Length: 117
Length: 117
Image (tube, rainbow over all chains, first blue to last red):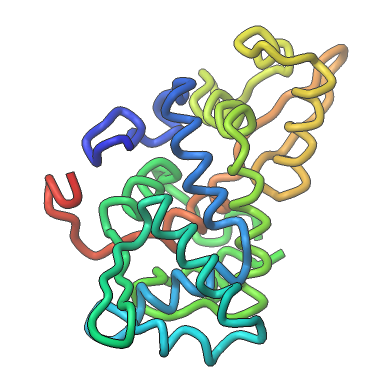
């Protein structure tokens, strides 16, 4: 895993990605490339108190609990979320440094309000 | 395509994504989920003058020109880059509003310098 201070975090408009950084970052983007997984991550990220019980994450989706569990495992293995079992339930929270790494990579210097509209 | 002002751009730590926004955004993340495509995008984004000739994009990779062309097509169809033929060559540039949309989505309020390290 690349640390939050690694060269990968420079905006790509400033310098091209090396092969190793691109491999690592593309795995993180792949974790965001499924719509259910992306919504799960956003539910965890925006959850009151900064963490969500798996019991909060099953209701909103029309997919099975094993599918949700699989998606959560992918998010965890990619380093986008942390998790901990407490009693019956597993709790999830986002790892802000990982999100920020991707955000920084895609940052552009200035975007006019209606650019590309 | 969602416009740059659509609700999708709110940071996901602030509010969860709706189904439609997640579908659109996951397609954009999927375009970034291949390491060669991600490096191609970063080469275009960081290229002097803000645009790159396809002739600048083939050299750095150990993949065939048709493969590069396919990746460029995916980036274009996802709305991450624009392109134009001028004489012999096609030129590519990033669409900053699209990159910024993804960057804004992943933005976190504060990340301590060594968080998660």
